[in-house]
Length: 89
Image 1: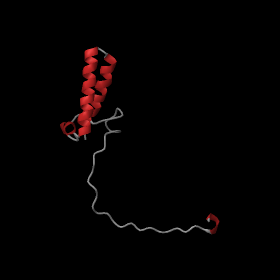
Image 2: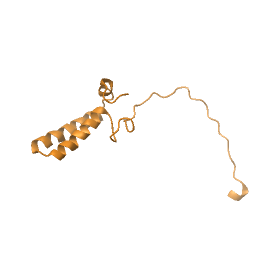
Image 3: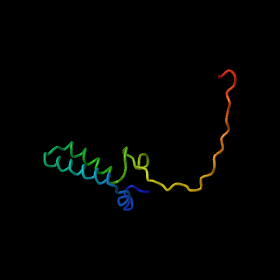
């Protein structure tokens, strides 16, 4: 999945993502009002990370995980019991 695709921008909008966007936008607005460039860059960085659903500065390495459906074809697992020797008791 590409980072700058429309599908990526439209997907995975949860209440937490709305909260992060709102908080970053609020901090960005406050930086604009108080004319603090560093705070604006800081808020813009987190706003871009949230909207594009990336983290750690790279699109491939730290993307937020997408929940997959569980595999319903689970096979039985067999175990072999290993008994300790006399030295390990």
